[in-house]
Image 1 (tube, rainbow, N blue to C red):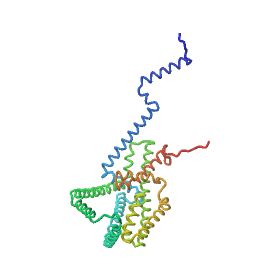
Image 2: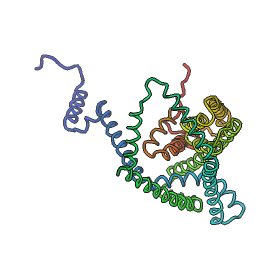
Image 3: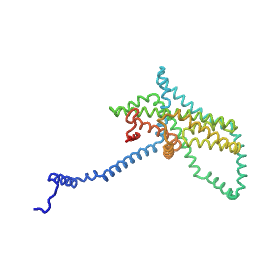
Image 4: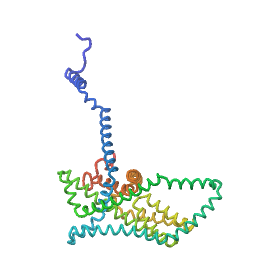
Length: 384
């Protein structure tokens, strides 16, 4: 007879023994505790990161296809209202597509021609002024105690000359020719894809949605509609803001009599599609041209004009034209620009922000037309 009798009922003791026996016999039960759940989450994160890395690798390896594809999608989204308007007026789909596509090509060609024409028209004047400004800069630099002497300057000139005449420079020139060929190929591919997106975009999207049913189909429809809306609104809003910026800075440059005012204004328009960084680069370039051609007083005035125009645009114009769905925090924009630049260079920097805005827009309609994904909803704190 046992000296001590357990106070637990016999059924409870048997149940505990059974659980302990199952735990010993079932190795997978180790994943049920806290550490096991942590390991499961870690494995899931590793799989997600691996899949995302593979997708990024494929995209960066096929930039000749992916970049024209994304650009064509963005342009098609921006001109979707024009296509709808033409079709509503009874214009055949092919003719409406050709009209819209021709408009896009003419706009892009006009911007390129305007830059080339203005630079050629004022190049001689700017070149002579640049020489005078450079000589004045050298004269001022000679007075500095740490300015290099004639021997060091000659060594630098010899090194530059040796690099230009070396095989490395020749290989770089061949790489430049290859880059131009890739650009032309990508441009032709983008125009071709854009034609089909404009003409048959809705039908192509319906074909993609065929495997989806029920709630999954509705969610996929919301994702597609939201992506097109965000891309289109972003391009149209940014283009309007960029046009106002370019006109404002152009007026300031013309009043200050800064040469190459028109190319600089066009450059302001183009760089405005890179948030934060683009405005800074445009201001620096305009100030440098003013410094070389007109002196440091005019350069400071140009900086003031650029800052004033950017403040007016950021505080008054952009909040009105850019919708709430495209309102991203400055930190998110900087991260997107960094990632986009690392993956795709200048083109990646241009595409990073609209892609990030579209991704955020998709999250906002994930569970319904106005219902964000559960994890993205703001927390409601109830008063006690």
